[in-house]
Length: 212
Length: 158
Image 1 (cartoon, each protein chain N blue to C red):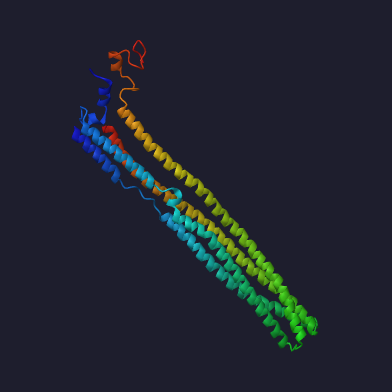
Image 2 (cartoon, helix red, strand yellow; image 1 turned 90 degrees about the vertical axis):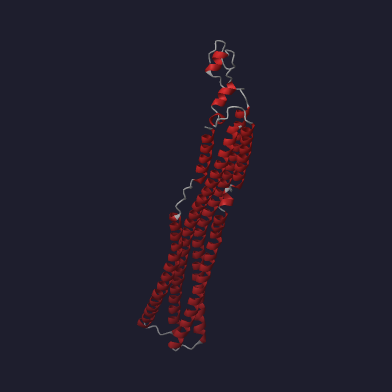
């Protein structure tokens, strides 16, 4: 008598491989391969890096951009201060030289002149430094904005990568459970064939007349 | 029949495992990085040249302005030293303001340009990171698939 189980086996890998009878070697090999496949898959999935790990070196380079910008801004400020100090010294020397050239020897005039110019220049320098600070602030906030967007994106990508790992694990265990239950589960719940219905009208899943 | 089946199964497994994964052509990304680094170098070069040009132009401008001021004072018949000195001081202060504003403007523009390139660099690194992660993911998926095939083969034999 042809049973459901026999029909199922006709479609199986065992049948294709020519293993007609229940073969303990084939079953043993199957179990061993399944275990190897399961362990291998889980191991490969475990080794899969999440986003932050996989891009750690690039993250370091991105985070370095902010301090690099700050260092450049500091250098620009220092350069401007040095340039203005140099200008101030040259101006003062020029004033003194001008007074000598014009034969003005009164010390009061010289002091007043340099003092007046220095005071005027300090105001101009303060404005210049403030202007540079403003420019630095605008450029720096744009850089900070880009860095913030990166951090926010990183959090999302990190979560996505962890979810991908999670779904991968669920998928592997699910495939194992599904595969084993279909292989070992017997006839229960299998869809009846036309042969089943003809030979055994009471097959579960059919009505009394033998229809589906 | 059985031998053919086993042979095909093994061949399939080896075939799948030995397929070369296509590599991402990273030359475009390398080119992008080179362009970004070039921009930094260009900015340094441009602003160094601009700074030198500014200094030399300003020197001429300063000399001319001071000369004009002295001529004006003489032309106006002002010979009193404190008065003429006062006029020259004011001129020098105005020139100093121009100098400071010019220097500050240049430095500010340089910072603005650096900031824009920094943003480009961040975008570049973000793309690079995404690419690197995808590559890692594909490698892992390929390994998982191979082990999965072995597992499926085993499950089919049970």
